Length: 139
Image (tube, rainbow, N blue to C red; front, top):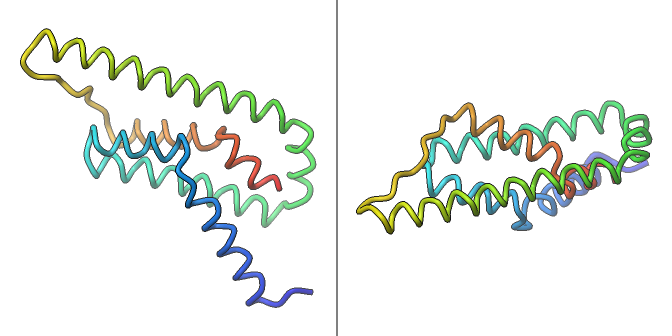
């Protein structure tokens, strides 16, 4: 039976392994922060951390029961998540191209207004269905 120090090191290593890679969610967070400011970006980061913490609590409390249920639907979960992330990427590209066209036709480009609440919901939903995050906690 592992002792508390071993479990702590394992949890710390797992957390760092999940947080370090720069994937689509990190790029979306960077883009959102640069476009809308630190306050809105911080809400996106808080949403991502909240979902990860919720996954961790669920895995800790329900462990194998949840893993077996989600494991049987893992491929669908991954496919839906990938589709949502592709949609968010396409939306980001479309907005960037639209803003570029607008800036070419006028002197100043306008940044679309957003709220911290909308950003939190957008990032929470995207993180819930993000395939790497979901598969990481399923493992």
